[in-house]
Length: 92
Image 1: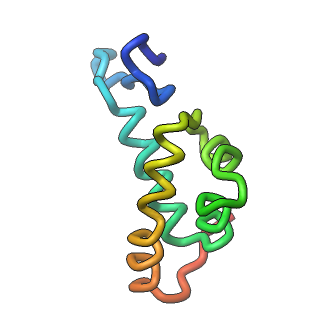
Image 2: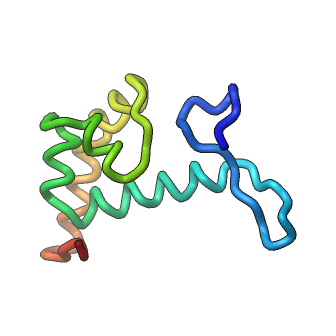
């Protein structure tokens, strides 16, 4: 569960011993965002300006203005990275 200090909407997860791990939810959200953005051109277009809030929500990320702005600024690099992988398509 998210804490008051956690602006992303993600809190930590639990390890195998049931102990709290800070940030594991944030890590998973980050990997979901980057992975999807690299392999899914429609998702990239949504992030680029179609409806970034809806795109982020579709993968379980609660968007903030700062996050949407940061993603928008990173899209050129995401496009460049994605082009290195050719025609990989997301499994949907």
